[in-house]
Length: 164
Image (cartoon, rainbow, N blue to C red; front, side, top):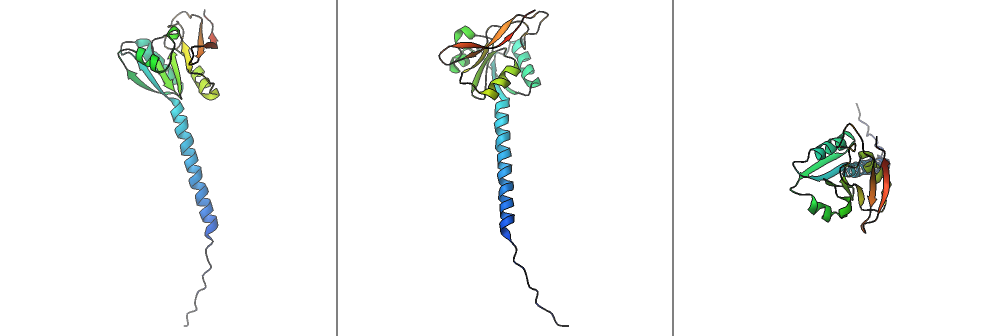
């Protein structure tokens, strides 16, 4: 029996290289997009250890697709100054998310809207501690407004919530 030489066909690597490159590119894109999304979901909350309503607000954030990182501090005043919250907007906790500052009992829906629309502003605030706001649930609801604030101290109403 006589063996015949086998003629090998050259393998075309270009399509395989192209598909490999596209696959790796897609995987990197998805990973980067997920990291950006996770960064917008992570919210750093500065609160005092004794404030119960702040803990309830954190639970509200968790229930609304945020990943709070709680930093218990002796006073939130330093963080309000650091993140540019005007004194007239003072509340009991300060948070940062996606490059914005959040002061007080701001509803998660308004934070999501802020991150989606990305207005030129410093952040959102709910001054004081209005009853009926997230973390301040009670039998009655006070009317309150979520304020959009700027670095120069200007504010505008971002969302209004009616009372009872």
